[in-house]
Each structure stands twice: as structure tokens, then as C-alpha cells.
Picture 1 (cartoon, helix red, strand yellow):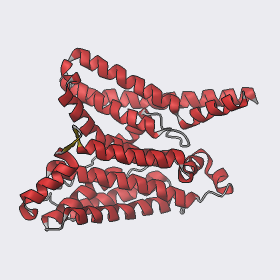
Picture 2: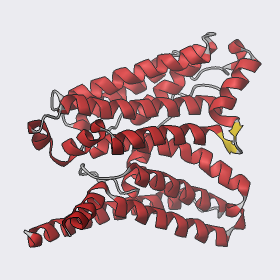
Picture 3: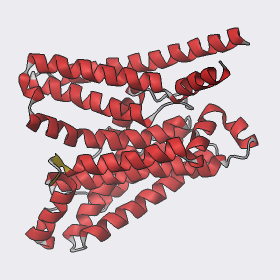
Picture 4: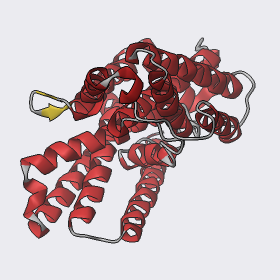
Length: 337
């Protein structure tokens, strides 16, 4: 009996129930749109859906790490824009793609460390700290090429090198699926393993549940917070590279509102905005559900306003469900005591 209670409690803490609910919702929505328009079931649409979903999945993974610690990252979208502009600008100057991506990753690391230090060490509210770095990163995105979008990366790099870069990160396929999905999926698996199977992952959950108790237990709250923000920045940089590959150039406004997309994918998948619970498996479902909803509404020619309205309602319902489940768990604990 004790072992069963422990298992049940662990599942509730980690948010498995919410993740399964998100997967169920995904299936219902996908089938419903497929019955309205059979193009939803076409292989081409499925491949395009998975490719588009990759951006939401990566952003969701990064935001989930931060939210499980009980914080939020508003700088994600700007880091995406900074990465897209920096990567593309360097390539238009003749820098090899691998070095351009490395430079973007280095800048992302700096943003992640600054965010984690401000929140973890100096105790700044995450909203304020990451709001500041949001403007800084977006400022870099604008300044890096003199307040204008870049030219096509192929002009300087040459068509062959530019095509190779674009195929690796956007247009190419592996095993029948577009490469962005595989990139996002591999990164998802790595961070899923870290969060669910390593000490660092347990520490992330611990400070999200109760930072003071975690500190008394020997958890380095500052270092763990920095790690979570580093994951967030890393995922945002990769999304920026994908967007640069998609467009073949850098766009100063790339990544606008992506921080909210990350919150939506996480919350829909059962990651609690209050911290301490949630599964990346749920984030996968949340990203897929959002992209399926967006894809289906586009195929039935629904206005953009309706799309945003539907997603907004789903996010609010997901948060309300989290609050309800938490209050129910709290009441059950009191009764058992």
C-alpha cells in the first residue's frame, strides 16, 4: 500500500496525468479537423505539421525547464531574434555556418547566465530580470546589421554552402521527415533524460517546489537556476538558427511573442506555472496540440483572430486545471494526515 501511494504521488507531482490529458486532447482535435478536411490526414500535411511543431517544441522545452523552477523567461523570443540575425549576419560576411552558429550559442550562454544569476543569486523577480534581457537581446538583434534585415546568405557564402545550411536546418529530410523535427526531437530526448533521470533534474524540481527547503537540503539554488535558464537560451538559439535557415536571411523581428508560445506549450502540456511539477512529455503534447490546432484552423480557413482566441481559451483552461488538481491533492494530503 505504501509503495502504491508513493508511486501515485510521484505521478501527480511530475504531472503525468496532465500530460496524458494533453495527448488525449491532441488526438481528439486532430481527428476532428481530419473529419472536416481530409487534407489533415495527408502525409505531406503531417510532415509539414511536424516541421512547424519543432519550433514550439524547442521553445516549450526551454520554458518548461524555467517554469518548473517556479520562474519564467520573457527573453526567449528576443534570443531567437538575436540568434537568427547574428547567425545570418555573420554568414553574409563570409563566416562559415558552424562558426556563425557557435557565436550565436556563445551569446545565448551569456544571456542564460545573466538571467540565472539575476534571478537565482540577486533574487530579482524573474519577470523583471528577463524583461530587461528581452530588450537587450532584441536590441542586439537590431544593431548587429545596422538596424536592417540581412541580405540573402547565399550572396557571400555561395549557393552551395547556403543550400547545405538551409537543407540541414530546414528543407532537408532524414528518414522521410524534415530535419527540424529530428533536431528538436533529439534535443527533447536529451533534456527529457536530464530532467527525469539525473540529479540536476531532481534539483530543478526541488527548487520549484520549495526553494528554501531545497537549499537546506544542500541544493545550489543559484547554480540550478542558471542551468535552467541556460537550457532556455540554448533552445532559443537553435530556433533562431532554424528560422534563419527557413528564410535564408536574418529578420530583426524573428521570434516575436515566442516566449508566450513557450508558456502556452508548457502549460497546455501540464507544466505548472507555480513551479515544481510537469513533464517534458507533456510539453511535447502541448506543442503538438498547439501546432495541430493552428494547422487545422488554417486548413478550414478560420480567421487568425479565431485561432488566437481558441489557443487563449485552452491556455486558461489548462492553468485552471492545474490549480484544481493542486487544490485537490492538497485536500487529499490533509485528509490522509
